Length: 77
Image 1 (cartoon, rainbow, N blue to C red):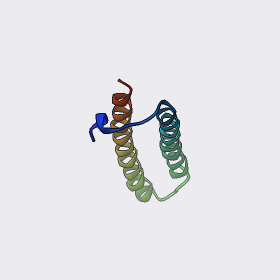
Image 2: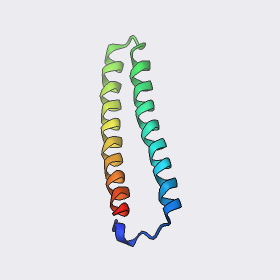
Image 3: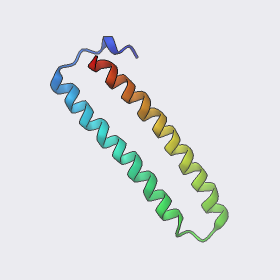
Image 4: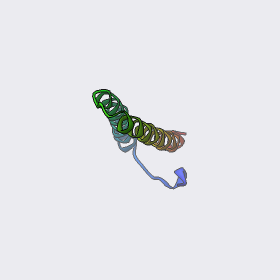
């Protein structure tokens, strides 16, 4: 995406930052919730497999977060 092609007002950018921050909190909170709940599962195979899936999902979410942040920051310049 070309950040120069985005025409936004200061208010729209400010709202976008708030939405972005909420998404980051949701990512982190959801990931921690999964880790907490996996701790109570007795089936070690299931727990191990799904802990790996949860780590992969969080890593992908982090990658997307970083890309989105770079785009937002580029529009501020």
